[in-house]
Image 1 (cartoon, rainbow, N blue to C red):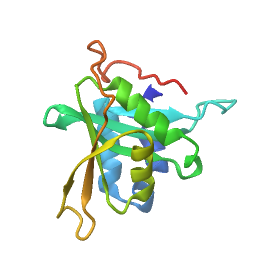
Image 2 (spheres, rainbow, N blue to C red; image 1 turned 120 degrees about the vertical axis):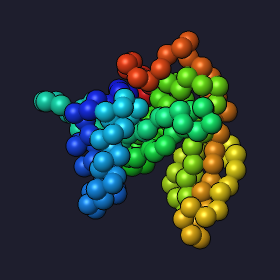
Image 3 (cartoon, helix red, strand yellow; image 1 turned 90 degrees about the horizontal axis):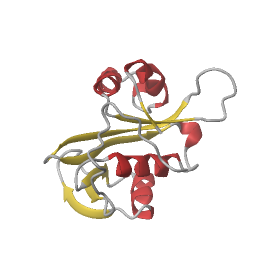
Image 4 (cartoon, helix red, strand yellow; image 1 turned 135 degrees about the horizontal axis):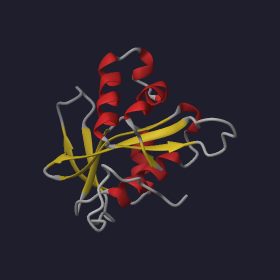
Length: 161
């Protein structure tokens, strides 16, 4: 895992399921997140020449009651079901600088719910009304702990694969 830079946003937009449909707001968000230094990125290490393409990314922010919040986790369509999502979750867990790390997903997002459950995250709440008929489920990572003052901004995040 590495921290994405401002120049990585176009490649991340190419693997994002909303950005590829022409969602300009998502593209703007990806650019803002990369410029803000809050994106962890998984790259394909097997690319022999030149820069490798991204396999996925996670956005780790601290705007949720001053705790870590995994705002988004996106895996490239060709990298799904290969452990990339789990690696991104672990990278967020080890990078998070607050005592607690949360995330949320729609009830209809069964792949993300399965990933969170398999990774030991616990349901922490439910919110109705964001997406009509599809409640938002909140999760808490039980293994979150501060990492010696290490913050995502200005550091490289690493994860053991």
